[in-house]
Length: 482
Image (cartoon, rainbow, N blue to C red; front, top):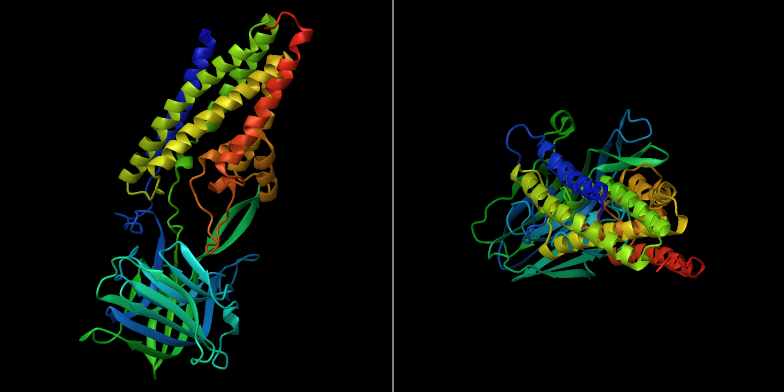
């Protein structure tokens, strides 16, 4: 390796480490004073767990049965005009019944709910979602009520629904290991933010989320198996609530009872993706694009030099690939865990990164950068002009990656770029999971890739193999090559 090459590789390492640490140290909490602890499930993963709860104690065997006669809601300042508060429900607004291990955010639960537009759902353990009868909350009324029932037997909770309170249909069943002898049972209301996209760039979308609230009305509530001396119903927020201007000056979340009819209103969500927006490992690698550009230029220059000097193509490809891998591996391997630790130490929510997943991200990205460098090297051999080859490599790898990790293009265009170009390889860094029961902007800009990691890596390998194959086939016409 020449001195210039070594300096370039050092610059690639520095860009990844320095920009990653700058991001971590520069990220500050937005709370006035200490931030409340983010909700985490029993495995330590960040979750959403914010809703209004009207509850009482439940023993090891018991049930709750309710008749839901109305589900309405409010959405504040939706597009296109953003100048009025309108009635409405988000698709995954929820009103229903729940059995939960206390009222601590993140504790185990099972719930049977009516949703805004996805019908009845039995949900538990934050990630699990079982569909019941389809329908919309707008169809719920006194003339067309929805009966919901949860039963508990030890650690098992089952959900049932009915149209008339007589004929019941089982929706789902969950086992909640360690559910205490005295759990909480009751009514819930929650409503996630209303999501829309504001167009930026050449059609990309920037997320905008507005406050919403769901309200449920129940005119029949019966419980069985409530513990002796449990007393009256209690009402409380699980998670932080009643701090927005809407809740302060318009309609606060809460529960009330009049003549046996209970009305409960709440905001938030219960689900697998944190409302606090935990930071993923990918976000700490803002210097990855800079390192990629440097390595592509280095690869193209070495390829053109090999072609001009009649060098050994195979040996040159191996050397430049190993050098790129050796450059990327320590840079990524240091930046990800150190940056995540710095963020967590500042009480900033970070997404859980299991050890095996972290190893896969580090090794996978190092392999992607190495393959991309060899791809540029092959282009340099074929085109025999360093800067022409570098330009082609940048256009095929760096540019698609850049315009998709920043929401510059329409979602469809970005998705296809990361399916069809060598930049597909960057799917190996995905650590997030897409969930049906959560409305979110599932795009590469937010850490969701259109291909599994192995498939994206296969696309990059195919491009690299084709370019090297073309270079090798040219050798007989050029005897100086080995």
